[in-house]
Length: 155
Image (cartoon, rainbow, N blue to C red):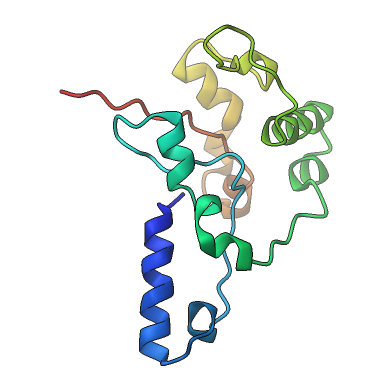
């Protein structure tokens, strides 16, 4: 997710360019994503810094009309019960219904999804039978995974 300052700069710029005092200069903006799960990357920042930098902390957020999904597409497309459980766990995580497993406030991935031991196992799980389907764009689009947060070192 982008830093809230990027949206605030866009807000001011559009108002100036279009000579209108409306939100975003009177333009309709469409933003997509799950704002409960994606925080901006703040090098060497604390959790509070990341939350303060997200769009939901901006004054603009109160003027945004939010629309939510009506269908859990992962379950709808695959018809797989494990996909249903994964989707439910993601919603619980986003709603704060999954409590941390340990004292440092972290949530172990085992309580959300399936953990694999090697990169090869992950590739085989995400892209089974990739060779015969490699040129099928729609098949590739259905395959996805959520990356973990990148830890930045002060080197």
